[in-house]
Image 1 (cartoon, one colour):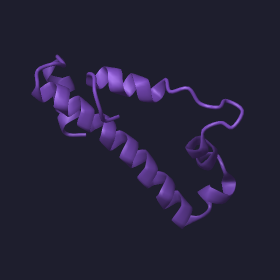
Image 2 (spheres, one colour):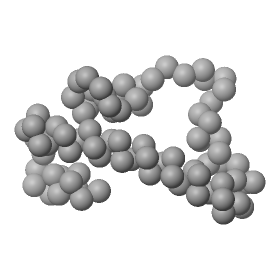
Image 3 (cartoon, rainbow, N blue to C red):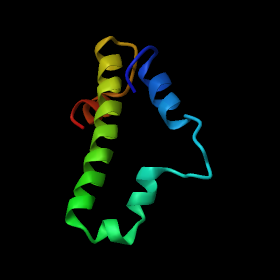
Length: 83
């Protein structure tokens, strides 16, 4: 979610990235795998992956708020900046 464009453009590009639909999402498959859910070590890997995606999205949004390219209500800005 780094690179050129606004935060909304970068996040949208990440979410709309064309993927091989027959393979599915590797992280999503892990999240639904009973073996992963029963393993503390694998759950930790999965949690770190989701945390990193969230961090990248928040970083992009914070950049746009700082540059005044993203306007949001005060509560919305608080949620973004404290996420």
